[in-house]
Amino acid sequence: MDFYQAVETRQSCRAYADRPVEKEAVLRILRAARLSPSACNSQPWTFVVADDPALCAKVSDCLQSGRLGINRWTGQVPCFIVLVSEKKERTGRAAEILQAHDFTQVDAGIAVQTLALAAAAEGLGSCIVGWIDRPALRKVLDIPEGKEVPVILALGYPADPAVLPKKRREEADLFRFGSYSAGEGR
Image 1 (cartoon, rainbow, N blue to C red):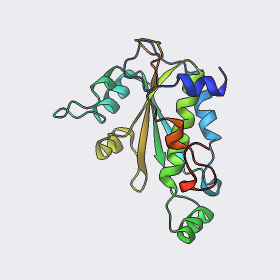
Image 2: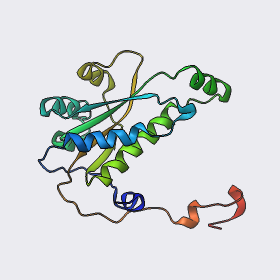
Image 3: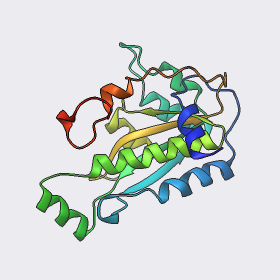
């Protein structure tokens, strides 16, 4: 699958087949994410893979809210890739101080998007999850204090491989050339 096809067909999958994800596919996806760009090439991440059914059940519990009914579908996910944000080395920290901007969330977003596109290229479904009971997840995965989990990627084979039409804003509403007020879509 080429890059543009992966972008066109990638969608948030919330129904997974009862089939494990092969370790080699997970490794290819992780290797792609390892090459993701980051501010000052700081690579401020570690990826923790949960693919054992018992561990996946515990991770899933950290993603659900019983009262709100959020993320119940995660109970069927055969693999999670947990992105753990690390502290940046000296150059990355200096750049953030000088710019008065923390790029950690941007870096995490870039990395998880790379994971999701690589998963699509592998024929896998994925969903980026941000609703997380972080203190509980920290205990489940033994994540040390001082490290954060901005997002998790649910990963598996889609129960229904049909690609749904994407609902997106019109290009004319999104594209500007030269300046913001330059006009629509030129």
